[in-house]
Amino acid sequence: MMNDEQDDVVELPGDDEPVRLRPRPGWVIRDYMELMRLPNVFTAMADVAMGFLFVQPIVAQSDSWALGLLIAASSMLYIAGVVLNDVFDLETDRTERPERPLPSGRISLRAARWVGWKFLLLGVLLGTGASFFVGQMRPGVVVALLATCILLYNAWLKRTPLGPLAMGACRMLNVMLGMSVLDAPLQAEHWLVAGAIGVYVAGVTWFARTEAQRSSRLHLSLATSVMMLGVAMLGWFPSWSPEIVIPLLQQQPQRWQLLMVLLGLLIGYRCLWAVLDPISARVRLAVAHSILSLVILDAAACYAIRDVFPAALILLLLLPAMFLGRWIEST
Image 1 (spheres, helix red, strand yellow):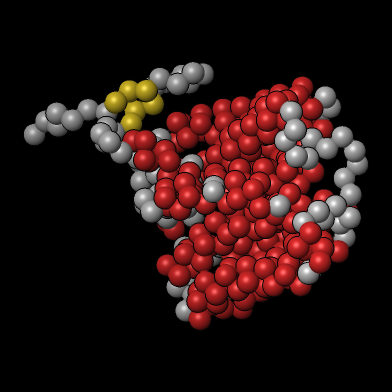
Image 2 (cartoon, rainbow, N blue to C red):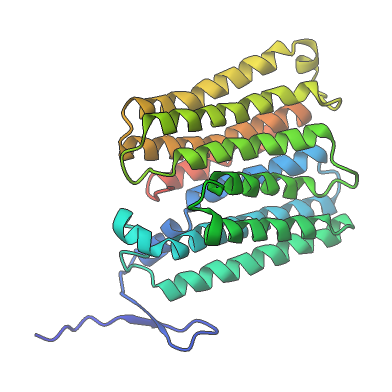
């Protein structure tokens, strides 16, 4: 019998041959959203927004433009990173995650490469463009370092013991991308906050390394300890910072410690649930929960410096992340 169903032809710039995608009406956009891990993009936005607001309030229109460009750059680089992650991991995913968009054939390898590399370039250009609004080249330098770190992780470091550290460095640089608007040397509290997010994400990455199969309880326990170290570092920063302006935290600093303990428990209980029975489904849920919790940690750090309203704006990023997470797998 002859098959009347034909593949759609999509011509991409710079390709010698057109990309053939199997027509799946109503699902192609969702396939790309899954490839891009779209729910997680909002956590990258939260990182860079927290970094920006941590060092500088929005007092002029140029500040708004700079923040918008940095958020857009961070989003593009995150998407590029996860897409290129699947490109480099294609052979492994054919065995461990055959349902993903690339190994399942829902998106072609050529199309994914085009998206990954073009978004990486776009992210660097947007981050560099923010330099013109802040009057210095620091955002351009940081965005170039972040793009380089993304490539190093995906191409070489991911499968090595340095993989979690490299991913943590990517998130640390993402926070520092927001902080790069500061027209002064970074102080100890800035490095501590950015480092805390980096350590936390290194722990999450370590936790997720064997999520496609049954994990080791010891491995998960150690990774959870690294995540909790990141939370503890974030809880420590007010004692380093002379810029705490929230009267309530100045008068009753124990409220900050209580908040961080509660956040640690909120994150840790799902990880403990996976440690008790380290099957793939539980580990993936714990990873997704831990990634979304980044938004809460970012909002908490912003609250300590800028009070409730800016922190609430960052916290609102949880809404689209959780909404999309109901249909789009984030790990």
